[in-house]
Image (cartoon, rainbow, N blue to C red):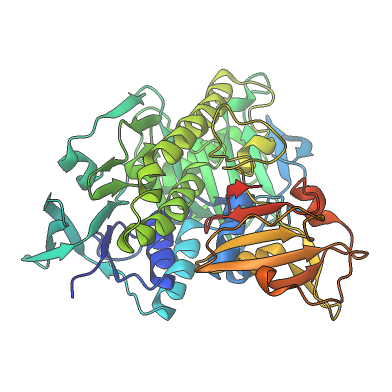
Length: 489
């Protein structure tokens, strides 16, 4: 039997998609042209909405155990410590937002966790394997793979290009990648040791107090002694340890910053692009293949993960014979990508202009406000919005959260209490849908729901679920498999 979906690109986007498909019982094959997994921090900021996705996929505990919170940054101007600040002040969890703060974990570590979870589901990444060509027709895609100098031709229902900014899939489709590349600004990014610095803190060094944004940063990475650095490239100097040390000596005089063990380094230029299309027939784009972001704001990796999370259940539905959800992928995700690109570009412009708040990160970067609602929709919570969490209890008094109930590949129907006299409950097909009846403590929770409303009966002890969903007795809310509202009554 041919694989139902082939994913090319084993970064966070491709791995998330393969994992989501595998847990839905979809036969998936994931390949990557690189000979081995990427080794470096690169996208090291995991936003709150991505943490929620990782909880659903069963990898959150590993991500939290391996990572750390955003560090306090110590600012040195002209070699003098002038203060401490955070890029974003910590926010306390709430019943509807259990993970309100960004989390730091190097991208290679995140990818390793996703690969391990994928392997538990029986899928292994095929490294050193490149998609070099493909053709498609009404029933599938014929894909040519190359590995060790040998070609292999395979047949698949769908092909997804998650193969980065230089995507072979996007180029083969002839899709325009509109945007700009600024060759006048070059940054050095990578991982290095700096054992003379306290690894519990991050650092910003600048030689000129009047031009603080001309300096460079060192941010501690969890799980060792490495820092991720970001520094302006001085002229056409080689991207090596000597260049970095010279920058440290110039921008941190007298501080004694000694850099060693350069693990990874790249030269980055502002490359801000958005594909005109995310889908052509049975071939789709996700992640950097569809949109490339500046690193400001930590949006790129997270937007790619959200692409995959949006796409997985829709591909599974199409493979079951329901193409409707898949037809919404481009409209939903391209709109989000455009908005996020605007945000990260605005933050980049602030940094280039030397704005005082260039390093501040507000709630808009957390991606909790992602919505697929229609522009004409109004109200506190409507179709397309993120479904909030809430604490509940079962009839025996044991605590349980809505997010725990949402885990897995199914949609969820929330039914709030019972409809009043003469108000019949709306009927929908509940095949493959988890049904949850939510009662207030004073609404007869000890009774068994009638047969026409059979479902798991839970108690909203403190009213958080009713409040979060702006519900009243008789309200019903259908939650999509990706944690967004599909419909409410």
